[in-house]
Image (cartoon, rainbow, N blue to C red; front, side, top):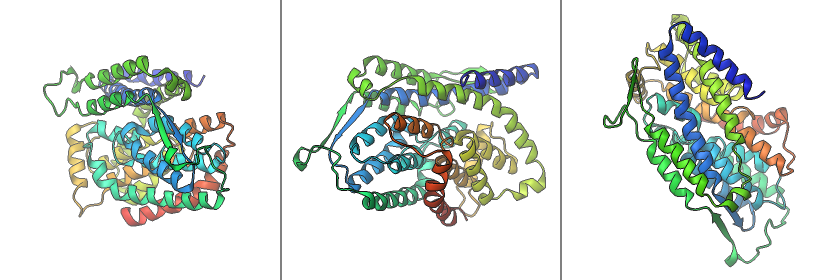
Length: 409
């Protein structure tokens, strides 16, 4: 049922658009969905063949270093890939004292906030990249907010972990000379590198990349085919022991694929409605960077952060008489955002869509996946409301509010 509903809704909207003669819009959306799910799926599959086995003691300092490295790695293999790759090693590292707060901060740092620096890091930023935002724009503009959020979360986690540390070693290894981290399936890192390089094969920038013309769209799936082929080869040649230790299966990425198919297609009429609404001068005038920040954040927490990014970018571009479906308009919008004398809506949108994805279990795809994986390891995870009121509001919300004051206002 969970897979049937989004596909049925997507098929219904697609049929309406075809009946109305809007096949160009439908093709553009399906093309973006294919690009999106190709990179997400490829990263998930390749990362699933890498197993990290830590043989060291889980002191608060070691845990903070692990989470910090995870936050950095997220920007290379994505929140889904990093969550799959690192959650079980983190649980193994703390196997004698793992508590729900360990998993919560893993969600905060690895599954969400860490991926703020590149389009590979989190789906909202990748959607922006597909629309035409330069790859390293996010790194340049969001580096300081990333440092602030990650550092603040690491400090809070260290204080909590230090206070709750019972002194029970998480490993039977006590000799510092023998403490190490074992990595199985290292050759899959080559696959990750290939996928990363393929991301830069943008037909809008390189004329030598073959394309297909459909209406006013140039379609090219060279990078997606490279990603899929790399994932297939890595899966077939992956170390079987690594796959077994990671308890790897295709089910989580299948659920993401079906859900996002429904999200991408059913989002089309919503985007049209938003563009129409912003044509009103009164509504356009009310859209400020702060309104954009909190509005995008609320949508990301309640719905999902990828469509929230697109919705917010659609509105703010329409406010400036630009169309998100136009590559040249996106380039013009980004150039305008680089002018420090003007309000930077895109920083507010990018930051909020990624960070607020951690505010609920449904705000970002890996959140619920991590919760399910932790519960499978007999960790008593908080309920949906407990997660919000016990961890998000008292810990994460004040940090985000400070970021809004420092970087957005």
